[in-house]
Image (cartoon, rainbow, N blue to C red; front, side, top):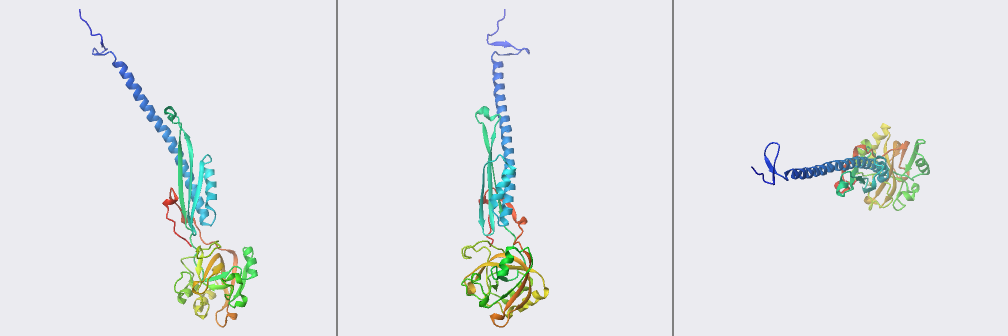
Length: 341
């Protein structure tokens, strides 16, 4: 009579196995299932978190670009950016917008977050995660090309003041003399400078007569900007350009003659303020109008020197920004903002 070890039992295949191995298999299976469930839960919950973050990135991208567009037009970029953010991500939490201006260029940074509830993570005591997104976009407005080196005070004459209140209404023809008897105090730094207009040395160089004549005939190709600033050009140089003292003379006839003969309308800057004098004279451009020279005299004494300009209805924009707005990073620190005057 054979005996069998009490801790051994015979399986169907005839192989004797330990009696507790079946229980071990069940334990291993339970462990593996727990791991698989954990991995599956991580994939599902992590995927939801990733999808929500991608949706937020799309929303912050659109908001930052919209804000940079407004910034290029001189408007508050954050007003438009936050409006876009709420439309594209209505359930966003902690929406935020920060702008970093630099002259007429700048960066707008838009950010926000959203809580995402977990399905499987709660089994491990993790109920939710937070999706976050941040986008920075840069704007740099294009300059207005082709301006002539004139600057006319926006308060040079009552008819000009009236026209600027409604520039779309009609054309305006204005004659400006060099004589101090015609000057308006607010149009000069000390209230004593003759006339209410001047010649501009766009690049601040050596006041070359040949250069000014080229600009008179062909326009200033690097382009100009305007500014709404009211402070000193020495503090806020945006939109400020140096004058060219003594340039209103017979020396500029070689440039004025072809401009006059062409009869074409060209960009002419209006200035809001002037400061300093002599070679340090600075004008802050405030607006740009389309005008043509219909008559002029640059010889004789100041009382007989004048320029006569006819302005078309409307004012010109000093830049079209679509090609100069782009996403430059996730935060403003990623972006190198050039200074644009």
